[in-house]
Image (cartoon, rainbow, N blue to C red; front, side):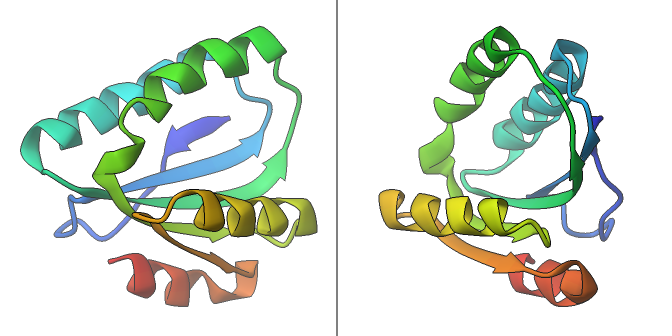
Length: 120
C-alpha cells in the first residue's frame, strides 16, 4: 500500500507518504493526484516518506508511475525518509548526492517525530 499519510494539518506544503507492503498503480495514481493538487498551491513542496515494509510491485508499474513523479522533482526542496531498511537508507544518500537542490535526510522508525519536525 502506498498512501497519503496523516500529518500536521497546518503543514500542507509537505506531502506525507506511507509505504506498507505491495504497491499498485491505483496507489500511485492517488498519491500523484495529491501531489498535483499541492503543486498547484505551492512553488515548492517537501516529501515525507515513511517506509514500514516493502512488498512486490511490477517493473512496468514502477516505470509508468515514477515518470510522472520525476517530472516535478525540481519542485521538492526537502525529502525525509523514515526506514530501518539499510538499502532504503543508502538509496536516500544517493538521491541526496544526485539532487543538489533537494535536501535529503534519513531517519530510523523510532525517530518519526524528528523526521516530521525536520521536513516541516
